[in-house]
Length: 376
Image (tube, rainbow, N blue to C red; front, side, top):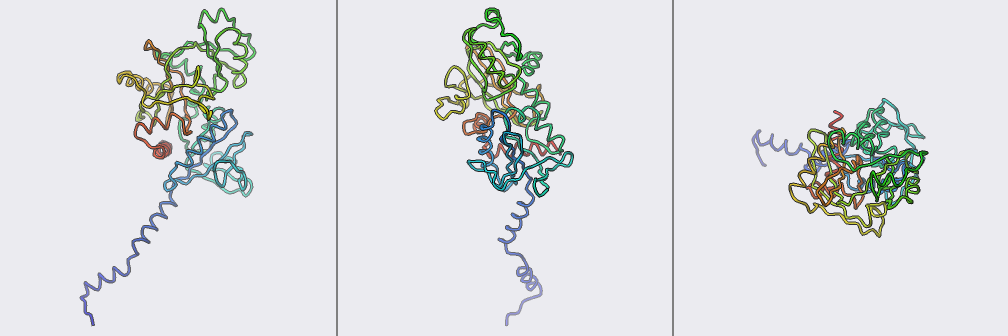
């Protein structure tokens, strides 16, 4: 018979009563999974950039670490209805989906049917254009009392409006491309007078739209009427910009001021006269992206500093992409600021951060954490 001391018996008792290590790990993993923040990934929308949103959202959905976050995919159809999907793959299927309606002030949504309560910790909008990056969904999040990834309502609305952005930046001494505006219903500007003020070619674009939708290059006065009509299909205000021969440079910004970070500088090589919708997204596009851009280190640092200042001046938080034109003579213009940049396979924003040492998955995690931290 084996005789042990009381001390030894105590040790043996402790060993036999201890949970196996594998079960401990499984229990901790289960607890971590149960405590994951809930993310409402919202995509689609009513704008002309609906399909681009789907492409971006698929990448984001695939990249989110489901060990860290519970993700509910929510599709906004072209009529503006919100659908909580069972799954999100290459095609959007409404089979088994339920509609979501907001419970304002209650930090939650209700499902139709069933009145099930959905209470996300944060909204992640992967939306472009109208009702996506113009402050609309950001305002809804504020009324719901749910934090939202990215800029707030005011900054989103401001940056979406290219004219308002130019006015503020010019007031603070930051160069923007010379421009004029045209409202739907006004007479077409006199071509000769316009040529004296801005010259040709011109670029005509909607004041509040993205992805180069509705943008036309105008080489002579006879093209102006059609270009304005194309822009006014998307906005009542059209921007008429002086055409500049320049390199197209972009910088990604991440974080909440004053602790925001600036990426390396990237460069777009458009397939054509300018970086059009087809040049950005068509399968046959030969457009290229160079990260980092081949420019002098001092020049890159100057561009990064301007991007940081623009981000702060416009009240941005979370994320934005600041786009520049750099002429052969070294003149630098801020072109525009995009508060929900693309997240497709060819989009510059995630590419810039990957080149700066932040993986796609880590980038999404950081954006979500920033929104949650700001809310706290």
